[in-house]
Length: 152
Image 1: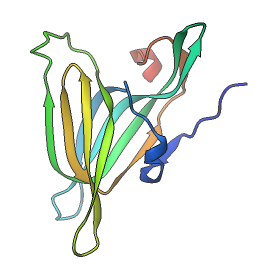
Image 2 (image 1 turned 90 degrees about the vertical axis):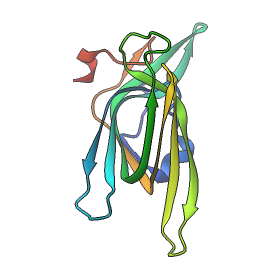
Image 3 (image 1 turned 30 degrees about the vertical axis):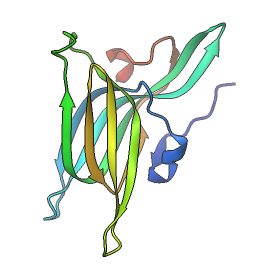
């Protein structure tokens, strides 16, 4: 019997989630309607639902997903393909961390950090939360990323 997985997560699920070795294929900013100067930061990722140890090797249950951080501000990015002379490919992260802040007015937000483990870099920003939604079917395979045909 195949394992059952959620198809959508939010900030309430953060402590149970892992983005270790998740590959990122793209990102974009969508400006919010408000005059606050914030935007939606949307990542196109291959989310690893499960790590399976099979006969001494790992298999991964991987599905395409959309990871969207809401009302972001203070965006800072560094992504370096030149120093390691890396070929252009999706980048992967070692994980996502957050630090909680509360303003004097009671507004709660987090400082998020995504450590890029290949090639090298980071993404940092402030945001009150995220949603993540699977956008396609999952595959059990020996690699941690999906090929273009699997992402459709």
